[in-house]
Length: 144
Image 1 (cartoon, helix red, strand yellow):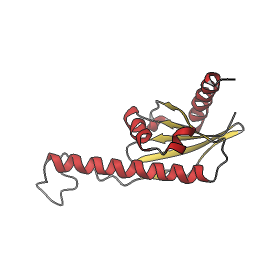
Image 2 (spheres, helix red, strand yellow; image 1 turned 60 degrees about the vertical axis):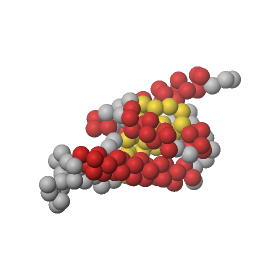
Image 3 (cartoon, one colour; image 1 turned 180 degrees about the vertical axis):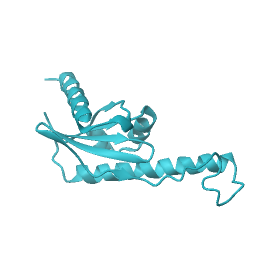
Image 4 (cartoon, one colour; image 1 turned 30 degrees about the vertical axis):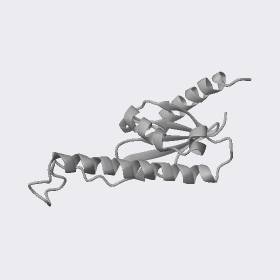
């Protein structure tokens, strides 16, 4: 089994797990500030608000910044690693697809699969088990 870096995504947080044959270690997580407030009113500083378009535009911009920060952090973690390091993306499908679209070709080449998990109910043991199962399925698909 090779070393795997599993990235668990949520709307404003990304958790990074280093899964090795000998154990699993949770690395420092990435927390992006989210200013989501009431509907169409982010924090009532500009009451009565700027309308639905500005509200949704702000949410899209927050998500874009968060996902680009995740990809930058992933690049930093992969940069110093050996060539056998593999990557797994986990979390809700919409966030996984969004991150896959902005991965560089080098990062995409290391991606062995994705996991649908609930980021709120996640432990290192669950990540280790699911990642090892995914890696086993991945190695069975590789030509000999």
